[in-house]
Amino acid sequence: MVSGETSGRRAEVELTNLDQPLFDGADAAKRDLVDYLEAVGEQLLGELRDRPLSVMRALRGQRPFMQKNLPRYAPPWVRTVVIWAESSKREVTYALCNDRATLLWFANQRAVEYHPTLVRVDRPDHPQTHLVLDVDPPPGAPFEAVARTARLVREALAEVGLAGAVKTSGAKGVHVFVPVAQPAATEAIAAATRALAARAERIDPELATTAYVLADREGKVFIDGTRAGGASVVAAYSPRLRPGTTVSFPVPWDELDRVAPTDFTIRAVPALIGAGNPWADHLPEPQPLPPELVGEGRAIPVARVAAMHEGKRRARSRRREADGE
Image (tube, rainbow, N blue to C red; front, side):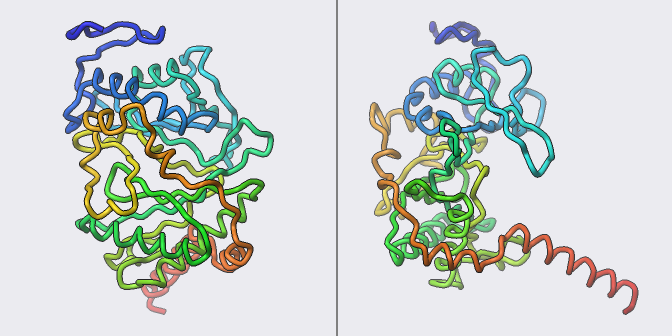
């Protein structure tokens, strides 16, 4: 495409308004997003293929929003899968971003972030393929605290003979991924995730917490052990709606202390990966989950459910206090 053109076609996809700013603070135009997704298309598609996809879109004049249901105006060649959403009691038509044309169509829709689910739909049993622990710092915490907490997760994995890879989330935290050998029940993966989060917290409870309720975290780094089943996680190589348009990017464990999330942007990442795929290189082979770890996790309450019950208990307590009981 000739520089300065505001529209055009790539991979048979009509592209428009390419010189418009991407979002406030992006330091990028829509053209830069398209160019980036073309440059890393092969690597990113490897993370998205056959996984129900949600995207974060940044339309001009609107607040960014998460889109799960594919719009009705989407081209007929965009593949889809319909999944029942228990939380909203409705069917959701998700896109499957399986090819470059679909990826560029999403770019033209100003889809900046790409959040695939942990399950694949190309097999009848829709297996969850990875165990994921999300390490999320409190406001104002340095990335060094995130790196230290991620190493707690790595230590907890090693204690039970597992290994994982780490990537920046593209925001302030990191994600630790553990490929899981199949067959593996989603419930078992969820239990193992809870157990690993609790084990990492116990190694250094002054630094890390598994408290799901924000007010209970006491300024500690949160290890989120709730990603399981139909949950989605931002993909490796996905841009983020953050200043500078950062990217979720793989980091070797021994380099985690020497990077910052802002090192990885849509301008920097293509040169960093070239024709390679560091995320695929860092991920270990799929591993079976130790039965004792799964059993340990089954004894830990599901965080969202426990938080809901605790919230109701606290609300009742406040009402009693207000009534003078």
